[in-house]
Amino acid sequence: MTTTATMDTAAETVAAIDAPMKGVIPHLNVVGAAKAAEFYQKAFGAQELMRLPAQDGERLMHCALVINGGSLFLCDCFPEMGHGYEHQPSNSFTMHLQVDDIDAWFDRAVQAGAEVLEPVSLMFWGDRYGRLRDPFGVCWSMGQTAQR
Image (tube, rainbow, N blue to C red; front, top):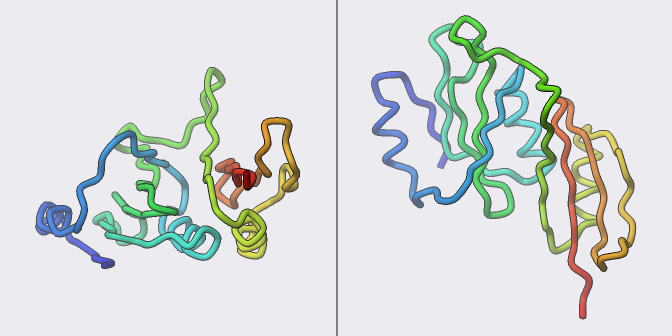
């Protein structure tokens, strides 16, 4: 279910999402959240649950996605509200996907425009593993547990 909401119906839209979201949910603040949502649908097979456009009609205040069974939130940067695009020198993060067919997942992401940082290879811990960077600067890793 993809839903576009206005500020007046945002609470109703959030309540309409089928399953409650639990645990830690990554919330990415990017420049171009609508384009990022489209990219994640192409690259990772994301399902968009809802989006809440900003009043300026150009940015997204919120977008909820599900990728490989996990939730991901996106929004645009809003420097006028204290939520700008900032690189923090004291931290970094990588989004990780543990998948069942790493070659298909990795190839789909590369075909959608992700940059290969580390090609898929067999690692010392037994997984096949590779790393990518998406067009929005977010680093992703993928792993596939070896068959035993």
